[in-house]
Image (cartoon, rainbow, N blue to C red; front, side, top):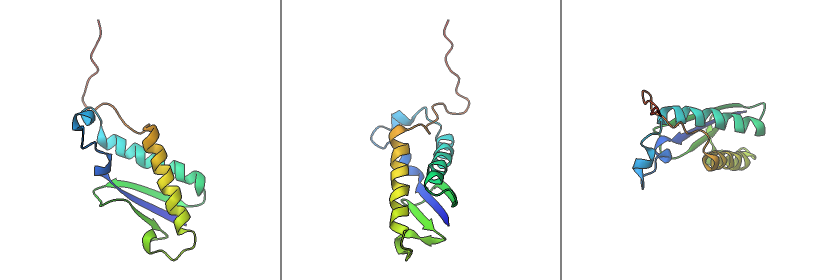
Length: 111
């Protein structure tokens, strides 16, 4: 089984309070999210080949065995969809994928 997930990079942005995102390294955060979601889904599907992409896509797209899950005729497609959404919600709830510093930023020294 192969599971491929494309999720929209803009979904990570806080449009109400853009200043809250000011110190966040988005690229590192996206890569962290990809790795963490792959690891989380591997617990559900240890034999599956899982790939996650945070990119300029429209919404979240899930492919199960190279077929869009919304058009899939596979019986377990809905459970895969539900498990992906639960895993994503869990990662967003805990937020451990965020990187706090942009490249090149220095931490202020205290005297």
